[in-house]
Length: 281
Image (cartoon, rainbow, N blue to C red; front, side, top):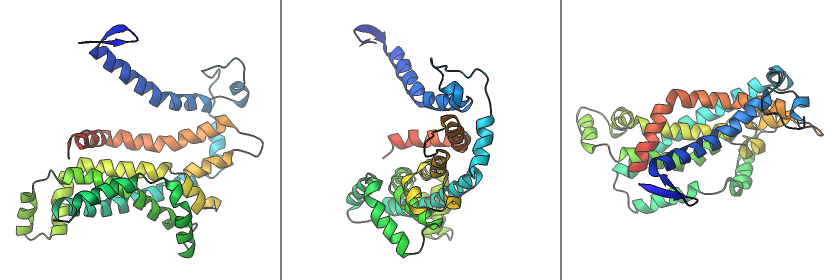
């Protein structure tokens, strides 16, 4: 089958490869550019004409990134917040998804629509009430000031992802488990969740990445340097009159590496979950 691209006949398979190449370049080019920038000196970066590859790659920017700011502390804060918010989100989301797919709830479709609508709310509209709530509760500059909002903000998407998998698990399996002495909640955690592992992993990865990358809430809720998360801590590398791109690029690569490792470890489950989730429901 031949299609036309700018008036030129192109086979369907070629179109697929072209589209795939565009997606890959769009996704990887910024990361490659940041990596190359992190290996340059400030002088080389400002050179005209632009040089794409560093003349003499240097790791000095990475050494400075670890000494100029407490980046390891920033990473630890991000890890704690992202991990705990993900655990809370997946736990509550699993209960909500199970209720939506197994219990005879009135207006179930309306509830699902509301969940989807809530997921589309822009974060900026929630900043003032969230800040006032955390201030009144005395939670500013604590991990809970980010863990709770992150879990709630990721909850709609995680719930919908897991619900798409839960509804395809035969209820007879849970019934058999309950006959053997399991409670309904026990059947959920011993039968439904293990059989829906790709969906649960997908939801967990989405929640973790959202928490790891989030900037606005972290900037608002944490004003102590030792409580900054990585996304906010990177901004501390710039000065009042200077913007050291090579140094900031090195810090960005340090921030990207944990996510890349996480995706590499769980990529099969994540891709399987996203692919299956796209044809379920």
